[in-house]
Image (cartoon, rainbow, N blue to C red; front, top):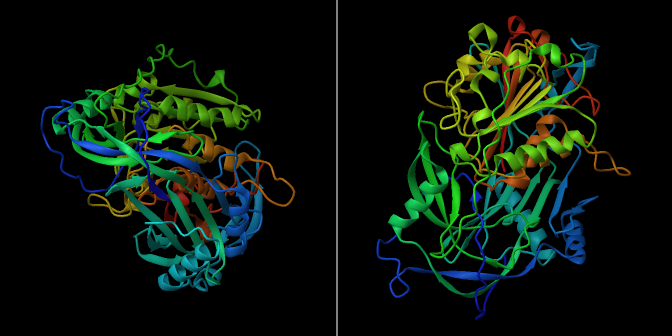
Length: 541
């Protein structure tokens, strides 16, 4: 990320509210009257350029030894090898599921898994630094750190039966004017396999020019602005000044400071952090209007069994999340454009807890989320469930892990874009203890170990990776789990850790590498009575 300094008049326009989660410690703000003479001022930046040129992208490809690198129309560069994040398995049989779909039974190839040996953190750092220097694209001011994508399996008692690192990842974090600078438009990341070859790469930055400064709200007024966006159902916590880097598809001409607003929902869940503009004279856009009330369920007879379909739900402005409707629409549109039915898409007060709860526990998921093949959710969450607080209470305002029995209807994949659902540890219980009982034919839960950024685009990115068509010898569809990982890498900062889990069935059966129907092999259902253990995969975005 290059930054120069130049005097330039600041254009005036309505600011955009940007939603996100965060992990950074709060920085102190000074309380004082927000007058022109006394207000605290923070630097502003003009955008000189965004993304990489074709020549720069080609240099990156050569320096990292990448083939089929993708440069989008905005200059963002991405690469994911076909085997990125794949886990070795063996096919042991074929069959059909309850809808007549052909299934392919696989078991974990433990011998191959045990042979995986990642390169060291030091070697990965050296390789990344050397390749970026060769490409003349070393990120100025970026701080490199390393992590591993990990796979863990346990038996029914939670005893570890396998643990391996799939790669070694180098990612860069940034500051701007001494503050965190984060988001999908501030991303440099590369992952290496055990042979030292790059299996995943992302480069998405802007070149910035310091243009001046802008008066920003004091601590008290910043909290008021956060409260206005987060709404009555969220108690404001820390307020942190940052610079947010949206995706390069947002054609910014200048960048101003923001406040990162954290909080807690009425039921105690950590709220998704929302970022608001920090400038004194910024204008918040109007929140989307609430959708009309939903009709009573018509019953399963109104929707066909035996078809491939999806559904989506999420809480929006009623829970302080302004972009949920846009995110669900991005998800829905990817499926609709390919002729795959979206059976329901409920938002705000129409998103109900009972749609995810098993009928044996008083819910109605057999009409909704357990009646489609893949369900996508966005909202506030915690290790033990997700929240409808401020929006609805049908049957109540929190879907607890103990309320879920998924897969005894039709759902194969539960995609939960929310906080900490798959936190590895958690309050008193580990991941498998909290969510293992939810699996009764369900293949995967895809979610996050950490908090994650509220987003208007994640759902569409995720769906496209699952559904895309090959172009020549690349651009192949990704497995459901890999699509979740790659969408999170594209959309989230490196502080966010995505995670996926599933069960192990009789004979070691696993659904680790499922594709969406029609895009690749899918494993058979594993009923709760046949579960012998659990698997878990996680990595940094």
